Image 1 (cartoon, each protein chain N blue to C red):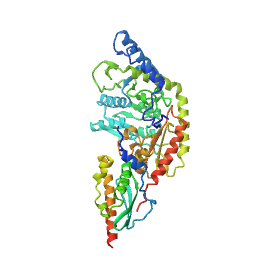
Image 2: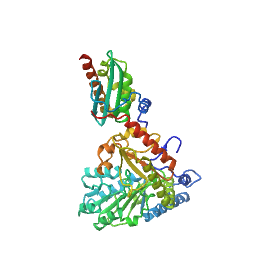
Image 3: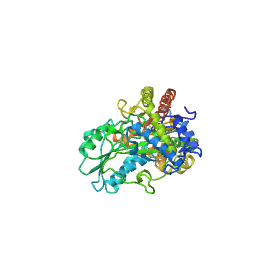
Image 4: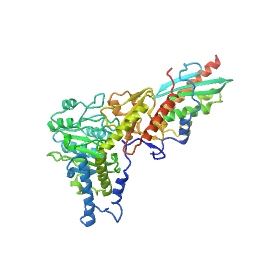
Length: 388
Length: 126
């Protein structure tokens, strides 16, 4: 516990690991490796070496060629670059695109923008568990399909997709396959080589690295050169120009190295915490689990309390820091599109609370969270009227 | 993002003092139930000598709605029945710094208050 609050919103962002912070500090001041890595002088070459070291660390974490990683500002930019970049670059071959309504808005909104721009879009519905049946993907692919985007781990429910099978189908049909792996990298054993993915979005701030840095893996493949979104320099093969943020990249690299070392321990830790919290709240009257405990990523637990308003529940839970739906949705008053796509009724979706845990979460915090949740539900239920 | 709730909203939401003891009261001469805009409100009153001696609520909705119900009860108690019909949503919106996007929800409270006022007036007249 930090003192002022109990932070259980790791799916929104993780705190920076102190070892990551230490690695970043080396790249900020005059006595460190702060120089522009594109510069040819010794200071620049030193920064370039740090960038290369970070690329190797990230590549090791996800088993890919470090030379195929493009640094971005985070998963939102990676998703935009992958989707807009590939859709536009391949538009002369066809304009059919495929995704799911359960994707993050950083994916769905990009597809909607492309649809408004003349692309044709197919939305794949998940099964009630949130998982996509690979046969449903195969059925929708057409000769003019250019790109499919399916996320690895859902940010609201923790549902894990069988991306390797989906990628195999795309490859058999010569369709580019993009995976938003922001919630998976550093948490699951992500092996890009085994995923059959052409494009993979990664974010540092979901794995104890800094905000503002991410990466897009782009497989070396004929006809898979995304169009750039920005112009203004020769950095990163002109695909993503701009001076590289060495301190952020170094932080990302350090976070990736730590994640690789602690992947198994971190997974076991969050699973134990998730199970402890579930045991602590499962007897709450009218409680519904959104997602699947058995197959989902255990760092996320999404539950609804019948009849309650999610916003009121969130306030009644303070000082507990959790989310209604995804953090990016917190300013919207609409029920979660992800839960709606799973067939969750609006009334149930409106009371959904997402708990998400991480490396620094303690059992004491989980026990306090369970207690606060029970109290909040009881106090709001005590206010509820019965219908006329 | 700044705190979406004013200090008064937080205070009234956290510790409402005018919650009706039971949620299951029928629609009687002194109780009105309204459901709209995702908000459910029941207001009930005790009247003596033309004055509202007790005004109680039960509600399901966002924190602003719950705080607004408590604010209304505190403001109206001790006043004549007619005060329910004279209730101005703008006053609550200003007092609690309710976002404009939530105006519709406060109007549900206004409808409930006015309906209760009309019902109480009829009961007094009969």
